[in-house]
Length: 284
Ligand code: DGL
Image 1 (cartoon, rainbow, N blue to C red):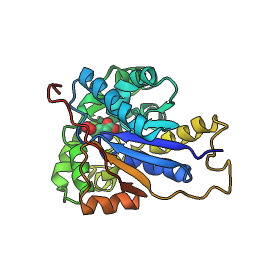
Image 2: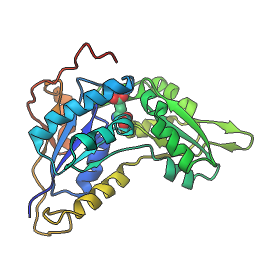
Image 3: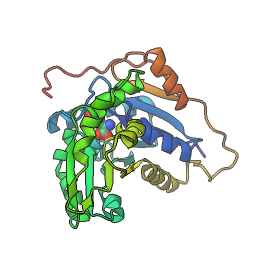
Image 4: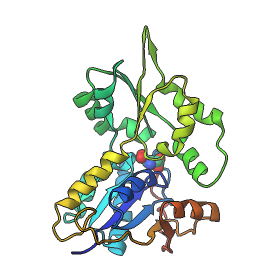
């Protein structure tokens, strides 16, 4: 049996919130974490250009890492690009990350939920369809944040992020209507759980912040479990946790020491990567 190789992909560092849950569930996998920092942020990209960019970057990453499974740890990409990726790589299983609207609607008592995401994700048909399918009985506030993903990146690079800046971005999630008020907020961008402690502290009232990462990790375990040629967690007790996984940045830049230290806490070492610059002709 061979050790599963898993590629986790995001526009930046947000996918680490998904990666850490997968690494907990399958510690014996070989991991590559890839951030398209040259293309970050994805939230403002025009849809056609984003499809082109993600498929092009994945071509390189798949060729270089030969994964058994790829996780698109990005709502902005998954809500748009998954069918294109599946068509481009018919033999590679993909697990995506999409807004956790179904569990939020099921668990909400007030039936008032908010979806906090990038402007791209809130504009997607995919997101509207999830609401129609699973939350038609709820009042759903879609909040497209221009700045939170960038603030989360700053935080991960060791910069101080002002409370006021975060409070301003999350404020529209909190809605009152007569005696009822929002009780669930879907974290529909993988960057946002990185700021969860601040969200909780700055929230005008307590809500449940719904992070889909544990559910995505369960899905990865399930998909790999269907592969009898791979040794997955629990399948073989003698498989020891691997050494550090590889972190790849499409800018080709080496992470600064503060970020390198954080990556290390996630069990990742940055490796050299030939830059994959964004074609400047591609309007965002
Ligand atoms: N982390 C990404 C997501 O889940 C998006 C951040 C961005 O690039 O704008 O949507």
